[in-house]
Length: 497
Image (cartoon, rainbow, N blue to C red; front, side, top):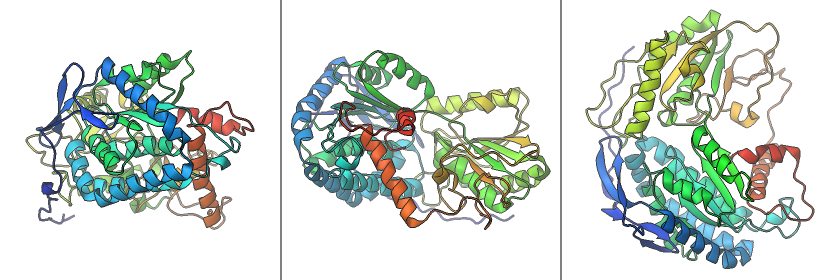
């Protein structure tokens, strides 16, 4: 099949001004680390040094937590309508600076500009607008008429969606009256530091948001600090377990959003072309750096060959290259460490007998790159079937036809319905056309037992998510608490699940 050739269409770097060095943002001001330590942040697409960033130590973490505690007294006393004004102001400034932030995100993270510009930044602004609207409505969250915030939230975010994860963490915390000490990933600190400047631009009171940069040791100091009331973490399962051990036996609240290995399930009556588009979006969106990426592919045996042929043809059309080029589909791997992990797992899969395939594509000479890869003949004995690769690798396993109607999916309905035509597939999806199998897909039978949700139902579900988010930032020692068993089970998920 002929492939269209696209002329280069690079986004200009001139819209973002990156300083040679950045300090820690504590109590409304930037300053050096107490011991003067710094580290470099690189552009993963070229290995170019973008800036030098302060490395926070125990003394710096303590200063940040104390600043947040001091600011908590006045911030939590503000009426929700007053806190909302700051959140609305932050959201508007993010919109005004969205092009600058999108270019920065692609430079520091390696993701294509189309994704940072058209997906990440609109969602970042939307989150602040959304929680600004909830700031004066917390009396309806189920904690009585006068709910109270928890206090100081220690938040640690990953490198795959740096600014979006920041919005997920900070927006609900501020809306519910908490103050924040946030640590971004050491490989993508710049967008968080630019957000600190946005906080100053919005006139946010000093100490309400504090940004400290550093590696895992900085995060460990933050989690263990006795002045933290709530720990919110998104990242690897291994680090999540370590955090759980650290906070065990304390009064700290904790939410963890960890790794996963979601699947696409394709039945013999599925619309193959639509299924292929969903599979492509599910695993290759954001370079596969998504905790719920569709890295597993379960295909009914009778259509496996047809599906794999179509999938390989589609993978051959993906454009890998400069993240700032608007035609790029797949950008760079975020870091040398992550690239080494992907290579190690891919090599292990091949060594254990899986068949490895990748389209012919020329990888850039500098930077961290890995071709989109498909593994077939994979069994549960393979490491790549059990361990999260967190990269652009999809593994396919044949599946026998079901002897009974397929069981109801355990993922959220709203997640399952994300199908082809969307840039994001958030969780497992099933692809079929008959109504006898309950897995959700791109087409729905008129005889389905679960009719499409009405606009009112969708609105109610959206409001429910905000209420759950508010609960996780409010003290449980409140009268008239109406927390259901379902909300208790969600305590291990992130604020904006």
